[in-house]
Length: 293
Image (cartoon, rainbow, N blue to C red; front, side, top):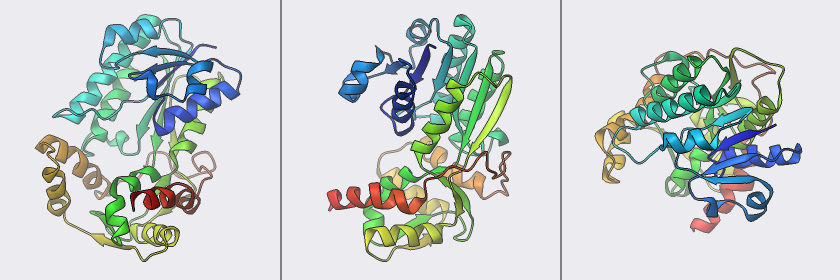
């Protein structure tokens, strides 16, 4: 089986690549910078240096693929939503021109709404573009990644978890490695066809207050969830030099979640993955916090 994996240095892609190797496959890894790959993984896989924005290169690299794992990275451009849609068009072209029969897309909860979810709107457009290819496609509707907490280590170490969501609003929180498990299982299976959606929800829906309690226990300090306004959330993003479209893409995701959103894929044995936030926080967040001082 020729399985092509994009973003193999990411939290999800690296897990997918490792599992495919363990399953006896030799995956094709499309990496913008192959030097960032684990040396053992690089030696065991077929590695192609590819910029995913280069459609011709992606078409060449995916020739003969039996399955494609597509992840659209967030690009440092003015309009992240349009950039995701453009990457979706690249993926759709590769699938169409190469006749790739099966695709697993790393999408997100909220994409089913098609608009009103900030950056996720770009993934919604990618879903539509891949659906139009006629290939068998599974859209992984992922919950909120544990690893997003690493983006605000300074705030957590200061004792604050900020959010624009109501503090009691529960969301599915998931370990990206578990997303990789589900993606690899889908890529290796030939038992499905047509258009599918697959929720990847982690073991529990958690409120911001509950997340703060779990994180605080792992860090050995009190962490309090604090709700801020959209403008208060936007200000530090602007201070980092983000454009207004970039800010809107980030803030808009929470705006969509506050709008009465109900996931198309409800929590079930099919969508529930095993790793609890506490286990990840002790194994990953705590050492990262220690390293950050």
